[in-house]
Image (cartoon, rainbow, N blue to C red; front, side, top):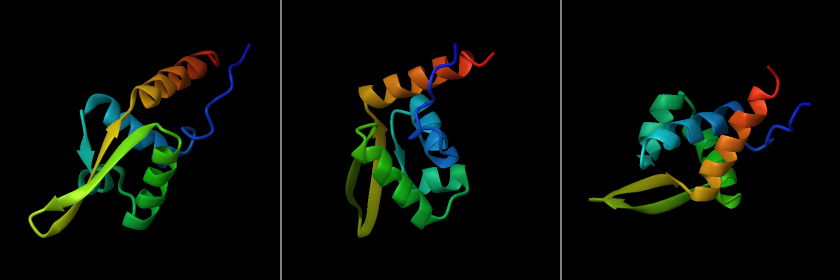
Length: 92
């Protein structure tokens, strides 16, 4: 029997962000943009969606005079990712 895939993680860019954060303690916006090849606008929208769902925490601050956004996976986000992987396995 197939398990349902989490539609929030089924998006390629959101899945990429969570996949990066699963192995990194945290990542800043610039690093995520470079790793995913996304535009800043699209990445910002997807980060907001993950944050609203409680999958990631977003800290906005400054590094010197430059704004800096840092993302961290929450325990809920880690569980959602693990469940997503298990659901994928049910398709084999």
